[in-house]
Length: 222
Image (cartoon, rainbow, N blue to C red):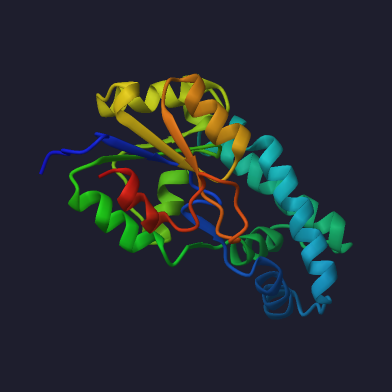
């Protein structure tokens, strides 16, 4: 069914919009206990995860193929080793994989069914590494068009990554809406590409014009 409303396509940010990490500190504690026999308190696990996430965010746009992705994962595992003051070698890669698990927000599956039912083309546009599409699929979310900053060669808020998504979809900028949780990367980046944009803020304290759940897109795409 072809879209008949204001838009022909919806572009979606991934992290913070479609998915979140599922209890990473608790998962890290469990994996350290099971794989290494190490007990760490929750605050120390949280601190280690925060450091790993910061390192990943700074380097993910360079992980454009299997080799560079492996290098990034090893570097992230090394961050955990340093923060936790342990030496685990290859086993820390397994611990990292146990800890970093994506889960969709509860409002995402019904929202995607809604958008699909409206005949809207969908694409994910996100700063991330080359495994983004696979990671989303593992979390139960499959998209035909996924653009990550690593393989695209541009990172939000650069409008180039948004234009690349439009090209892949064959949709004009004025007929697309982007949704994301970052006012700069998502709103400013999309608007610089001529795309309407809306902020999602599930805290219930979002600014005027934002939405609190992805299902609220129903009113915006009508």
